[in-house]
Picture 1: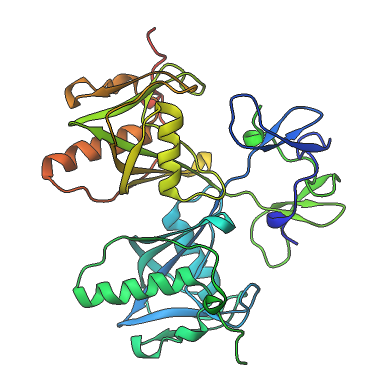
Picture 2: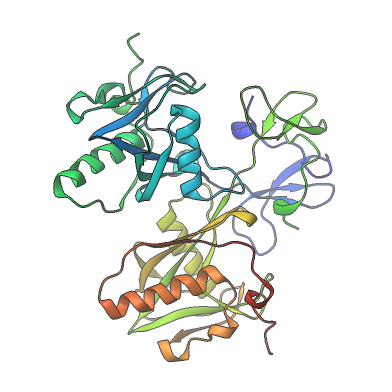
Length: 195
Length: 195
């Protein structure tokens, strides 16, 4: 079980209880230890991946984990300590799609403030065209533009990055695309996978 | 005291002790609760700011807090939950320099993997030219390029972004600049402020 969405009740440093309070000089309530006084800040996390191309087709992964089990996504995941954003994109692609990539440049930055995440997608190329299904993927495949399973995409950030990439490819120039996503209205929620 | 660099000893969910272990299906050691089994992931944090311009000059802040007390920096700070990257840049500028800004686009992305941070700087313009010293600043000022106190800059990421901005201004086009910073060699450590 991941502690990502569990409420903080105890100080991770001394084990005493924490309470919500606005520290002196601060403007927001924080989890403050009632024992040792440590302030436990909580900050957004980065989810980093890439749009990996091979002979004009794009590498997608079908998720073997929740959320969005069974739906398609770009290889991406939480950035780890002690790595760079580009290293995170390459590592996630190796883990989820067993594919080695040359990372290009930052292509999309997507803020999703209500879930405390910033998603980043890099341009990339498969090094040798090889790929497979990592532990978190049911399958992986290269897609021509016409075959991309848009109704079965797992995340709005992924669809945003992919559409921008396809448009930029037509223009012959890959820029940097940013957007902010807010809680989806009911008709924006990805469907339950068919199979 | 901030809990940022304190070792995790206790589960923030149930208060039991944690131990370092590689969870099933994972590749890195994590803090895992010996009581409830919660896995406590630790991820990099984003520090976000802006290069705020007014009539050709740049807004800098002299730090009233550690680290780098007394040295100069761009307005920037840790991104909070429930905000976007651009909102973080504007909020930090208001807090540290009492200045309202129109945020432009992402201009610099700096990875600093050994301290688990990603720094981002946006282009920006002061809205009305007004600014002041927030609680975390000894003073703030607008600097012409020739007057920028390079030897008294607080952080290498800030110097990188500022130099790139000045070069891009000469070219008449502001791009996106990325770099990775590793532990400084002794002669790269910013000096103790003179006064």
